[in-house]
Length: 234
Image (cartoon, rainbow, N blue to C red):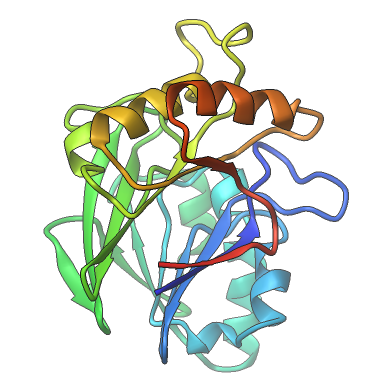
């Protein structure tokens, strides 16, 4: 299983960057986790959209789903359709992209797509949002999406080979009411869940990424910072 970062900026893209979008591949099996600003261009540098088994949208905030709009045009022009797993709740952006181009399915019970075993967990965020777990050949990847907590989250992440976790704030910046984890909180989750490796992501442009990584590593040594274009093999 390979994990490729098409975009990892938080809220809006940095220069030459892209917001949330991650590609998970194994042979001919390919999944896209989120489709934020700039992600479609990165995807098309590697694959055609119809080469995906499915798109998984953790939630419908713009920085995780806005490239569904140009993707709708691509599918329309090329007479293709795409399977999309997403929260069942309504959202204005979801209404904008509804049509024959997308086959929407609500998150629910665990399922298998190609060789991937998928499961989902509701997490705390201002809109309905989910963490995603992907298993293949004894390896486990967990992507939290945007998160500030959630019942059973540590157990959901338990002993994952890679935990990709929202870590938007330093400890000094974080306070109650914010919709994202701090880097230290991401490290604490990784430690509690006993994962093998933590990747912190969703840093806003202009953030002190070195400090974010330092604070994550103070809680969990095996932490790395997400970078656009990075590929890991699990």
